[in-house]
Length: 510
Image (tube, rainbow, N blue to C red; front, side, top):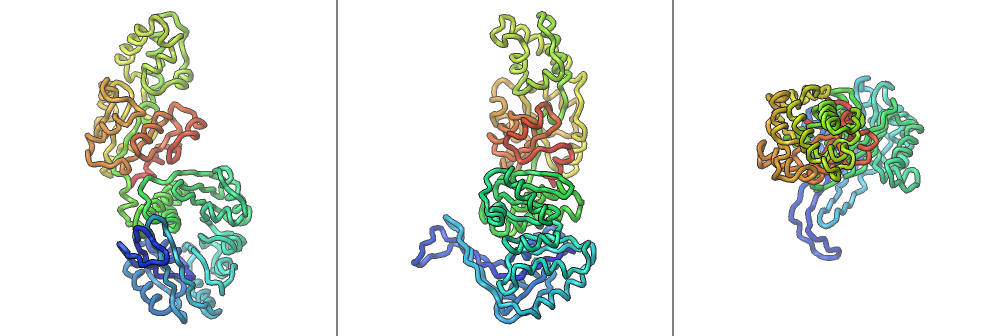
């Protein structure tokens, strides 16, 4: 069971105003009311994802009753403590800019907190507690630390999503996970953080102060995670039109816990966290399950270096041609270091003098004939990639291939290796522009579903050409570390993240 504690819950009143004019009458174009508070948001998304959760905290007056009623509609179990006064109302105005006006909430009495401590004694060692959001001023900055200290077992995992003194004091109790955003990290340490390296530096300081694991949210730029066993993970958020950022950080926490409870895998959980945060940012409220689980409706794969290791066949063809013209042969590693953006460009780099060589066209023709006659003598599917294709077929996720290789050759390779798993492919047909132009990607997609949007497709490749192709096509991109380009080169490119195992591609799909 995941328990969340929201010390100062609210009714959040969302108003859409195209152009807010201060000091004048404004007409809303839309309005909605949601139960609010960071812990409550975590519970709502967990419930939508099918995870059992109980919302704890304090409720007061008719607004408190309405908060509980709305949560029960979301199938969230509630165990609030009743207080005097009224739970707060927060007003959130969206238009050209996002404006928030937050209420103060009821005054907390010491007996309310003692009653909460009693409820904590019902927790079991397998339970998880989320402490999220601000606290009423009357409770002080040590309240989260004191709650953790009142837990019946140190085996209970605690997640803290708070800022300033609340976060700092809670670190003494060594929470399982803390999740500041980059602005909260700046404010906590009184520094200006500009780079990922600086984020890592101060996230590491949080670990030195007691946090076991740290996720720093970078908003639309994704996040960075440091784990207690020394892993460092970075990932950009999926693409989408930002509608409302309220609750995105809370959804990140919920997504992490949902996948962590299921798998115990930190990397899977981190990627799911960012997926959930992005889904909420692109929704009018907390994201719905289908916006998260069914984010990508198709997968597009680069061929050489991503799906198929063709380097030995390419090298054999290169050296066959070079030998006929008395040029020195190249090693597999030498060919790997210069392959990319089509076989003609490969031969330009391999033949001394490139296209300026008098016999280049003859040498290229010889290479091409040999290669097409010996297309997959040594080529092998990368470990785990057949499992990805099989799993996509089971899940009903269509897979396409795009390549700068001659289209007929791509078709022969697909028929030989992947006939039952690839729905469409596109290669060089001498008409459409090659990668990194988007033409081949959209040609492959048109055979899958002409109605597919770019943001509904995940592109996977192994090079700068693939990174640019995905960018031109407007698609989210993963780069694989097992392909033809060195990791240090990939780290300088634009992508969501770099995956080291084929199975990690599936972390981003259903």
